Image (spheres, rainbow, N blue to C red):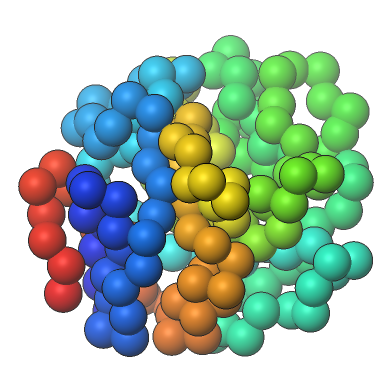
Length: 170
């Protein structure tokens, strides 16, 4: 199944169409670390991470793992573990996956810049929970929690996130 991200802030799949937040710099074909852009491209859905202390495991056919306070994601291009999960504390710059604001209560890891990893081409690009006002992200795609959970119920191995400037839904 392809899941289409529309540049006007909507995400569509055969089971629905919901509002989403995108990167503050819009959608760009040439993503760079820290540019605030959502990368254009077609990305496989790798796995789902969630906070088991806040919600039940999401219903999905994708691989599923609970996160804990020591989980992070490297965002430092000089780190040998760049754009990979890391254990905190970590000697390089990284993003904490255990957040108090709820944005990472459910995280879909997508196949952006991971096969192979190219230092500086963007890290920690996820589908995650949106802020209540759908404020722009640092480059991720964000949905309201109920919408993200509904999408995940329809997702399985082989599904892809399609992000293209000017693309339209299913």
